[in-house]
Length: 332
View 1 (cartoon, rainbow, N blue to C red):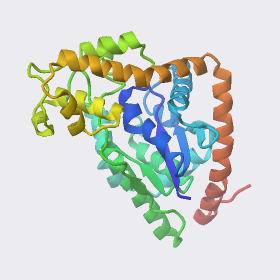
View 2: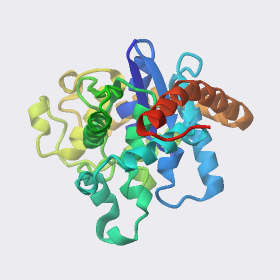
View 3: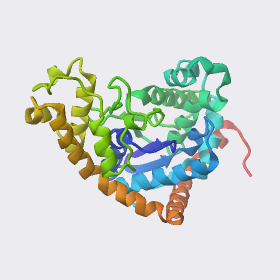
View 4: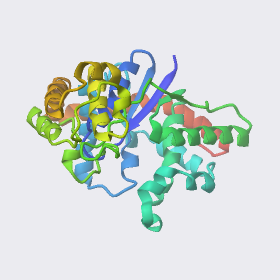
């Protein structure tokens, strides 16, 4: 069976974009692939984190994944820092990857902005750790969105160069897994920006921990335009907020945008927002309730992560041992 690796950062609340863009896909993939799902806490500390908040966030993300349907018995679910192979392989890849490759990473340029000289080395070398996350398990496939394609290409470049440098056929050239039309959820306050944990306004996103009343309030206040909803997809052109809300409805209802507009075209936003609220609450409220139940027992979450880390380590440890032998490092 092909093996999938995918990870999510524990930085702030999981939101609707995380659920529709990634987590829901993980749930569907777990019946078709051997899946390794990781809470990537070492990626999180490439920027400063408050330690108690980080520990809570690791548990909250884990609870969110399980509440959304990820089965920790069927899959491997763990946090990255519990498995030493990630950091060990990342150092080897630091010595394989070229500075020019990393300098071309658009995400680093976006995150660093004008403060390039003041950001951490970890943020710059982030893609090497991502490559190590994937290749520590010799993952054959990674589900990716548009913003991660460049990092996966770098992973393939690193694998290819490692194999060529040492004359081996060791690491696979991991393939992207494209799951139909991507669900790209945008900000509720600005339809041109991606929904984000880092947005200053909590009204820009729907969190997976939001109550039904909070979801309703956020959708009522979501930015729209004065025109009624169009009856065709073409009518969404140049209307980013309308396109975003229709896209969210379509994703939650498992419909195409054309099918949604066939139902609601011509409606004022006030009516449509009510229907969207009912749909969003019906999908997210059970997840919210289960997350709260799981978070009330943090020891059980920690036990799930430890068990997952043991299973992950059993795969990764022999791989990193062989890497060290290939490179020429002595092992105890």
